[in-house]
Image (tube, rainbow, N blue to C red; front, side, top):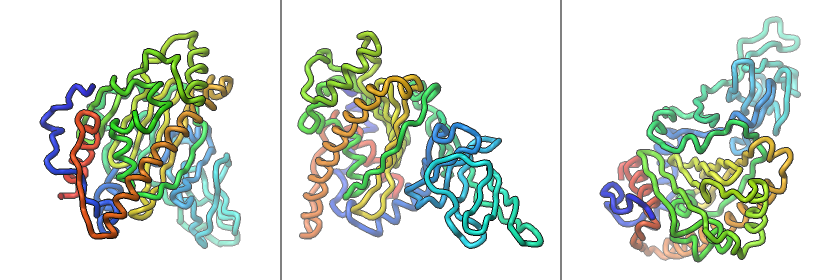
Length: 365
């Protein structure tokens, strides 16, 4: 159980958030300004562009920016030509120089304009190059000092990406408010009724919370009886990791960490995942999930990769289902002009208490 469930810092000063907090357009704009623009602004991991000239455009930005591996490291470059504002690159790949297909304006790997055909003089018009911070290879473009924000985070070694490779990214459209997603990520009260497979892999009664100023984590233990499993996906994942390890149990069942407001770091046996939320409207959110695996597993043990992603997708679909239920109920009340707030269950919802307290503090509410 939570070792600080009764801590005074977690005692809620107010009830849960009002219904309007999930539907108010003006509030979302305030969140964008005070939480997201001021926040860490995660843009990807160095492993997405491991070699010189590798690029990865950023889909949720409509590809207006891209990660580029240049001679000095990874940069966040603009991907819109400075001449006629055409999109330059799409998706992933590798280039020697960045060449706009429309008129062949050519930039180097750090965004400097090298040539503009038939101009007497090459204009001084480089691509936008946004400074980046890094923590464990994670790249952030925001104004906050991420290293300082995570200076007291005790699980950094568990999120060591050394020897890992990027496998793939998945973008999900969630038809509900971003806070709805975060709340489900930060409460364990729903695990038993909603996750039949996950609850037989992790132990819902054996967990530990940890809290910092701008982060929290949940360490989930393993079930002693891993052999009992209702989910074919989790059974395959269990069998694959135990076959690879020679029957040795992993260190944890899972570790879920969040860096507020929207970056979630997920530890699983032989996988690290990064997911982050981008609110589009009060009732529409993008969830981007990136999967990373040790190189030998990514290349030679695809059974583990495939089994993990199938189990992950199963739990993600179940989370989306409960988020739908919460959204529909709140929306029905909102449209009728009603409000309602319930109590927190401690310790299962301690993470949600911490998030709500942070949210109110940052917004001055």
